[in-house]
Length: 179
Figure (cartoon, rainbow, N blue to C red):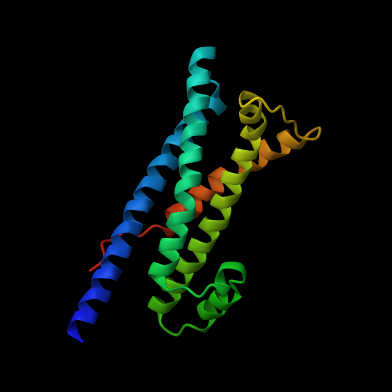
């Protein structure tokens, strides 16, 4: 019986350690995408630098998109959050309202912020990949265009949601050491 407990404890530790490593990789790739995107938005440098920044931004965004799914799956199982909260977080809002202790309310708010990070990050990644899709399709030999004005709307969504994502992420991340 003790071997089962130690094996499950080892599994929990490995899951949390893997989640932490995925989180670091996702944050680093997102930071590279953020810096390169900010430099592109500021239009610094010449054409060659802009191309390098654009490729860096695209590669970092693709890496973040590839790390997004395994991180969410591991983080979701690590916290043992019910799947229904992913699409219907009203239960978490009710827990915030009903919580008698400040600690329980703080944990529920962190969970709600985590869901917000998940959805806003998904929208930022999808809008960025959709903006890049015609160029990538052209390079692959399959020309693709979006309807008139569609790309402009995607760029606006991408640019407006990025600062919101940063704000929510800063509020969600644990800044104090855990015991």
